[in-house]
Amino acid sequence: MDDIRPKSYSTVFIKIMDKGFNLSVPTEQESMYREGYEVFMHKIKLHEAKGHGPLEAVALSSVDCMVALQRAQDQLNKLIAALEDRMDDLDSTISEALVGL
Image 1: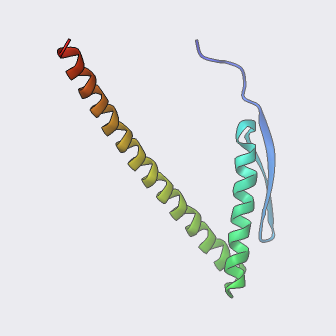
Image 2: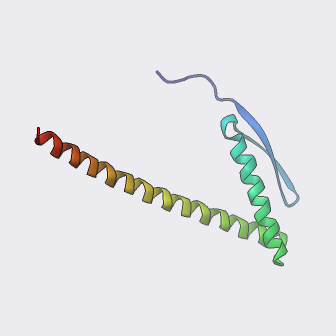
Image 3: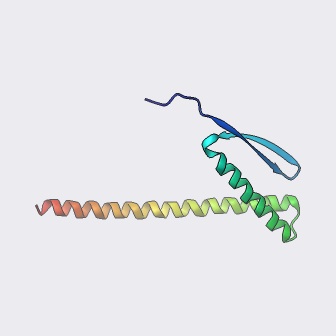
């Protein structure tokens, strides 16, 4: 039976340049939004320190984050493939052991 209780939401405030936004996010993900925002703002400051303007720093930080997500997805896919290979090996080993009984 599906859980029909409404999800609880929290508000997370973020400010990029001169715009502020109140995001309504699932409560269980609130810390991810807050931490992600802090990392993003840190990346912006790093790009600004390299001489980029505010808009360029936001754009470059966005690209940095997208690349990080792609790297994480690739790594996850490799880990899943390795786990599937191990499961296949284990299945073969167990099958051989059962045939030998």
